[in-house]
Image (cartoon, rainbow, N blue to C red; front, top):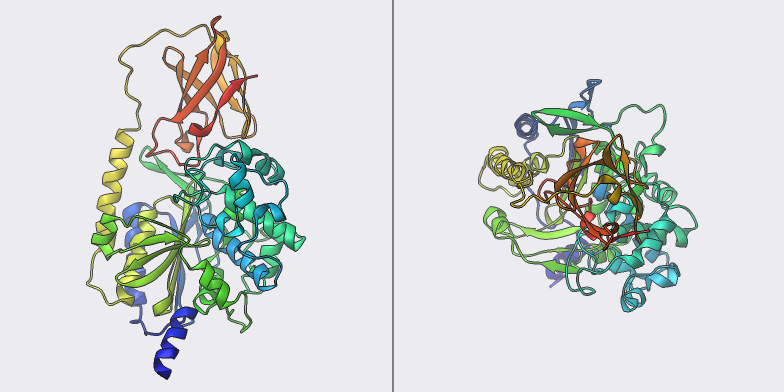
Length: 513
């Protein structure tokens, strides 16, 4: 009976109750190099934690192809959406301190918070912000923060009420960043300091994550050891700087290294106890964060690959089973840079991978190889297995990215007929003007969203952004009045397979001012 009670307590607390096989670090180094070569990744950093020890922490390749600076275990990358678990942990600390409950209404802490549906506004709880079940669609409203805008938190909160829900409240999983921005503001209101300050003072510093910062602009000026993203186009890699999603705040703004992130992994695997022996958050709150708050159908391909039986999302964590053990994980993506964190609590193993090229498959190949060692699974060449799928999918996606020629090409009206200011209630103003005989479009809150309108047919054009590396060409369809002036416009990406979902042009409802 005592043994049974001990086992039950261990599993509830997230402690390891079975030992894992030792990770073959020499083999992992070989796999990392092979993966970088196969997927054309300039730089990668990897850390592995096993039984509360950092057994592997190394950098590979270069941080920036222009400078040829090397990646090491302290090189900073934007961890993007792996920030979400930090925002959840910040709220967990505040729950432990009795300053809020997971089931508090959001409007009790943010009185100005409003969503499109008054019922959802009234019933939205703190835990709903963190579990992608708000009813908003995939990436809906992201153009308020992506790719870097001039909007304040107040502007973002003000825009939420204009976003029409994609599904009913708590009925479907749909990944949404704005709810985590909102959650970050809850942290700020309750703590009396900015989200950035709270994360640094109450999580990063206690964890001795000395180089990490809650925003690119906060990196120490004398620290030049940070990576830049790279985007593949036309057969070569193009260095591409972004500020590590600073506008995403609680949804994606943290800059970190694998050396620092290893302390985060150790704390997660120890039920919230930091390497210094102090408790960052309680095991009780970790159980909340690691509990599926919404589920989605298991993938057939994932079942074939690793026997996935279920998958869901907790509070800042994706949750699934992997060959019969519980796996906590999350990915993060920026233009030209991706990250991946994976935990197997039952085996007391954690992995973090940071890279400066947007090939998730390269990271997944390394992760699967580590887990293969840990679980003593049949040996597979994960690099080649995932490369085949990755490049076949990429080839198909890019083949379909070119818009098909219209079957009936209708002439356009004179350029002047399309000019003017369009307004969307949640984004703001979009200006269409004629310059040097060409139609230009300007998303006034977003420096990188300026481009030229190329006629497609009739009153439909294709927006060709000045920055081609965005890979976000979009259709714009003007609706005209009886006197052939613009009344409204709708937009959508030319290719949903190539264009990042955060370019949510489809959710704009542009009206002439």
